[in-house]
Amino acid sequence: PPSPSSSMSASQRTDWREVGSSNKLGGDLARPFSSIDTGISKSFPRENQFIPESKSGPPTGGRNTPEPPKHAPISPPKSSNHGKDDESKLLGGGHGKSADLGGRQKSDDGKDLALLDPLKYPVKRGQEELQSIEKTIQLINKRDPTLLKRYRSDPHKISRVVMREVRPKNGFNHEKAARFYQETVEWRESFHCEHMLRHPPGKLHIMNMLMPELNFGCVDKEGYPVLFMRFGLSTGKQVLARLSAQEVAMCHAYCLDMMELMCRMQTKRTGRWIDKMRVVIDFQNISIFAIRDFLGFAKRCAHMDTTYYTGLMMSTHLINVPASLSWATALFWPFISAGVKRKVFLFTTGFEPVLQKLIPPESLPKQYGGKREWAYKDPNTIDWKAHDQEIKKFAYKNMGLKSVVLNTGSEHSETMEIEAGTQVDYYFETDMTSLYFEAIVQYDGKAQSVPVVEKSTRKCNSVPERSWVNLYHSGKIKFRWINHGGWGSRTQTLRYALTTKKVKIQESDGCLGHLRLIQ
Figure 1 (cartoon, helix red, strand yellow):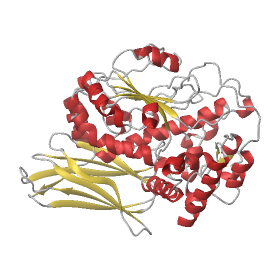
Figure 2 (cartoon, helix red, strand yellow; figure 1 turned 180 degrees about the vertical axis):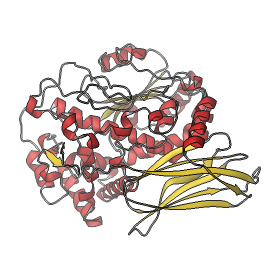
Figure 3 (tube, one colour; figure 1 turned 120 degrees about the vertical axis):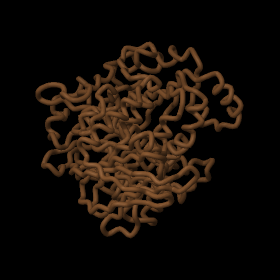
Figure 4 (tube, helix red, strand yellow; figure 1 turned 90 degrees about the horizontal axis):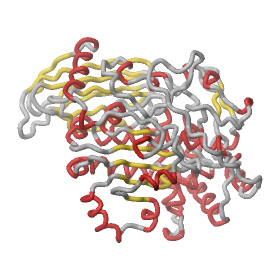
């Protein structure tokens, strides 16, 4: 990531080199997907990565992330203890580790990792809000005393997670707020979200190709992070053929966790608590058919936004919206809540002055009148056949494929013993029709299994399937291929390969992952 603000003293800065090579948020993430033993072309750069600098200069693999805009820094709030004592009381009762964040924490490789201390950034809260937070904390402890130790328990996070349910118009439903917090903790643990930035989802490169993102290093004039997305597909055919709803959702979670990290870094730079972000979505060249095909995926991502990342969105600007879609929105606009209307802005044209007023030129891409470079390949011009052929060539050459015949209505499965910190790469294809695929993990000591890859239809007769799953606990993983026996199904040959490699598990992630601060 970019270097800290020049106004910080040398003693306040944390060098990337201090974190240690095994502890950087780089590694495989800092290289193009093609260099991670995949054989995929290097012609598709990734703009949503952040790469630490090494002693010898910029990293050799991947792209350097430009430094954030050097506009006038926001002055810290006037020194005041308003609300700090109350927040200290909320943290002092044994609610997790947040109460004693002394600035640094030892990581498992012996290096120090800087953590952000929320108590140093008090926020003015009314007495009613403080009472609501305290009441919700009590109910969370009543549900499960360990919940607040397994996730962030600082008032900032509790407030953001629960205030949508304890606002007066919702009748101060503290019980529902506690349930939302519990769901967030259990969901993040089920999919190991705290490790996601170090070990990204396997289909992230496909998401970047279909829907390019610029999600690191951009901030508005007030210091809030800005996420740029481009959703300009002329058809949703490639999305449906290459991604499942779960894979889209996990890539979306990766993006939002990236923005959470940006919030922590901006908090350190500006001297005030930053806990929200802005979103700009470009719909140029979008077709109504692509929107129709992607609607189910969008609903799942929206559920994540409102349930597990509550309150993160500060505003959303939809630009280059087709006239047909704007007319449809106008029909439903009277029925949309006032809160959504305050946050969502829709433009068919004439959005440049609005964005330029909100975002400094250093953070605004050149496409919208700024100075920031944002290079991406138009997904409508990608040669997908050539892309798929590269994946096939790599698999046939390096992965040692197995072959099995699947009759109509039959299935094939393979179970593997896995150790903690294992990445399982998988590849498969068929010669006739699509099939169902899923991967289920049974962790040691756990009664219930977890679907790390949900059961979904894979059109592997036309698109070879190539991805991986990261597992951070020992147990068994079972892969299943099902020849569903539906209309058009027939006897076919399944070719597949499973390979494993070790991945580093950072103890410093865990429940305090969202308070990581690596500069």
